Length: 197
Image (cartoon, rainbow, N blue to C red):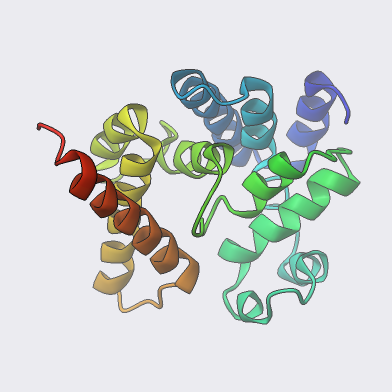
């Protein structure tokens, strides 16, 4: 893997100024979350910085890079294609070989069931990056620093409400992620009781 400095120099030349600022913001938030939840800070920093590395590619190039491993994702457009394409780009252009980092990049838009803590950190860091402005962002950030799972449950609720309110389809990975985390939460509450508010 190339150094973080080399990654930053190369990435800055690949992205728009807006996307560059967002990527640095996600990197910083990922490092904060990683420190709070005892996740590898270097991996969080690298994945946070590179999570949108494929955003400047054309949709056709994203499709080629994403491959045909997930036929469904082909029908969802650039907003979802850039994540699997970004994992490929991180490997091929930035020489990232760490599978945990690549998986966190791949899952940062949709999430999925049984995510690792690193994957959760990048998913949430992208969601709560300070440049993002939407109602409820601060609530999600607060929950994310208390518990990665609670942060993701709140983020998933926000995503699903947003998509339903606009008559947009909801990718199954988001629903599966929410259901798995909610099921785990309910099981913990059966054993330990509900936490005090």
